[in-house]
Length: 347
Image (cartoon, rainbow, N blue to C red):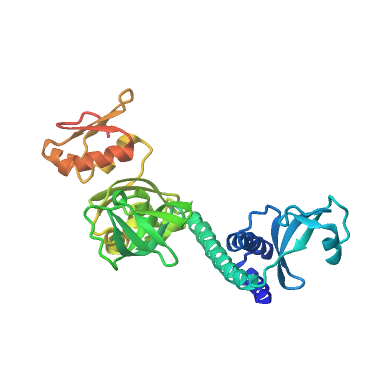
């Protein structure tokens, strides 16, 4: 059985990438604990050695050579040491083998447990490294079950967590539903990697545009800013690195095909795609469409933009429950004050 342990160690090194030395040391440590437990040994000078040359597992005990024996656990008579073929002087510390007859059975069981544990740990480490590199990306998963207010998502080799605060209230999460999720965070824990997912994160929208729009994926069109109310509406500002490419048209797609796919993935969330402008007055006017903006006046001190729209478009500019104005404020970084009337300034 001892030889089988060494064969297993070598196979695991080749197939799982766990070094032979690391695994051997772990088994020796576990065997020492097993010996102490099963044979009630408190002697601190005990060690367990896996001898790869002979294929044997040996238990060794350090003992002091004495003329008169007082403690057989920690001492050995000089004449007994000589009978074992060890020539030592009184006071010397020597190691002798004390391997119990039935220790092979215990060793085999212990080694198996350690090997399985190390394989699990190695697999967890590989998964952690893989998902750490994917932090900030999107992944497809299947709703597996509910635990409290959180949802557990099957990601293939591991499960992720969709916390309640990362769930969109208007979305229905049924067991078996296949959805795309944004990977918010990957943490290493004693139970393995903890992967936190989101359906509310603004970057989920950005990553979906990267998937659906080749111009975004290739870097010709940049998604510069996103303001989002999950499940209801998002405003996405885009700009082109090539004057021949229309960034808004690229994101919308032929007959709206590209943005429609994104809307379907977001379960009907509306998406406004606008041209990005460095001038906040133009950006605000673009973001408030379809309302016509007559003028935008900026107050640098209070970081407020006073916007004038036709009186009959005031409610359109503000939006339902103030949503249009609120998203525009988030996107531009300016407080928005919308009033109806006539504009006397250029946009």
